[in-house]
Image (spheres, rainbow, N blue to C red):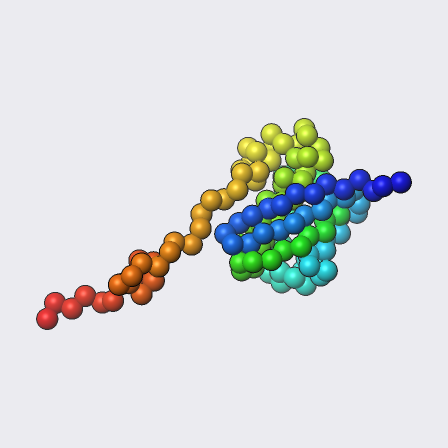
Length: 130
């Protein structure tokens, strides 16, 4: 008997999350660590659990994820995106709820490139009149 699992990828900034969703008790495993061990901040944990809270499926699925690239905030966003997409496949009636909350579409904002003559993307050296 094969176990029923749903796979999706989530992306945010430079982070990529590979997410496997399986019916279970609500356990999270992110890079072989628990949710609170990996992220540490409650706000990031809330971001990751947002798709389950909106669809009231908290504790219904186990999440196994592999996350790399970017920072912790981008990784949390990528994980949320991957979970939302996997939930939409697992239960198709949840898709409109997730779509109206804006969790299915990828956040396209990226870091702006540095321009020559400037210190950062937009930061210039201080203007001197004399």
